[in-house]
Image (cartoon, rainbow, N blue to C red; front, side):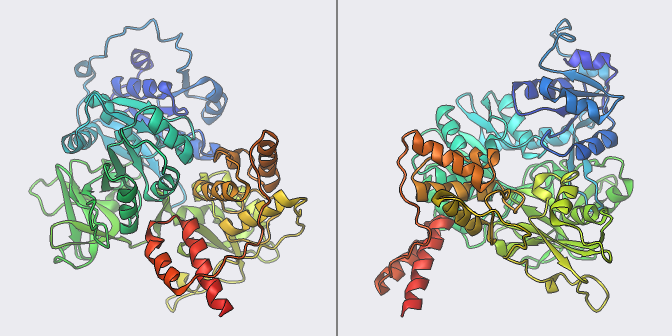
Length: 602
């Protein structure tokens, strides 16, 4: 396949797009693109076609590699592009089986390895250009630090449009370990992950902290003999989660890593202690050949303990943004702390401070970029897409931290007499934004609150309503649907919910879907996979699965629609509070409600 790409004219720094679901063929495509000297551009087929079309036009690939059932989608992305079906292979299996000679191609360590698109504040995603030397440095550091061997198995479950996938793919292949590919969409199903870890004897895998929390809730009975190390990154890791991790997996090592896509996955690392973790989990110290700076607004280093902005220097810094010279110049600035006049450092927009022991504490963002469930999101991109709707005069997007799991809320001011319908507005942004960037709530305002200098006062925006305005509501028809309506309303924080309302259009996502399944298990004593919510995301649809499970002989008890928790004694209350840190969110809420009920009865 690499030779076939070369015959198409691929040369170093050219791009080859790959649009495939997670499979062995994806590995073939990645390696072929790299062997041909190209940089691969991952295109997630789950993303809207309009977004994929922009990535293709912006990256201008020489070829696009795909698989049979996605050829139709890929053919629509560009009429001029050579589309190769990796699952067929008839056009390239007659080629030489030897590796192309990188020397004759003129391939060097400074050529591009991949171009990965991240959310952009201007309304379009931006392509981050990463060179081979940066990837190699990152992989060698990881092997020197954590040492995979022939008896290790790494689970590849991160969508390949996100940079954690880079080490999931190539670290085991470079170290002689086994690479296990999760099934498509398997990363969203904690029960599937537990069974895969057991069956495939996985020793190493990655979680964003929010998904690690869900995984721990589902892995109480998991065989723990093989799992050795869990790598966390993508979100802030809490000390409560670290303690719970070691309570449940005392013989597994937990690592906290930090880094943006613009600096090749990760730039700092910290080993989480199994005993007495600090209240704030550090992001650690710089990895090999990496320089971390914490600077003030004048690009001067701040003292230990003083908050500043994180800047990154060293071999991992990206070449810049593809076709975005002005943005590249703004974010990749000259490094004044080294003699090399070509050296640059990346301005992260993250805040942090040095600790006395030389580690770094992460303290959030200084702009409107947020991370939610491991996804990096520019709120400005959401706002720009909303502003393209002809009925929207002004739009502001925020991350609603009060929702617990973090949800995006969009506030819109409509053009006079043109108030957009929420479902149509949601459908409009769904055409261009991936699902994790689509707002969960839309709030209509007559005007935006402003600060004294005329900017939108985000702190003055009203809290999103918990009550839905509905023109017509399809009510539940039996006890099963009534119970499911209450479950949907409880986990979504919304009322009322109709039996035909789409769970995801109401603001649901994969982590909340796990909560739905947990409550279904508790109320009905039936086992349903998480994918049931994705396949049938309505009360009516999910009720069918529950009835089918009952008919198949599953034990089912009468749902308790309004359970009245019994009161706790004073001694019991103390015991409850001592246990909260180790409980799931659902169990903690139940116990706390019992305390509140007792107080109200008194």
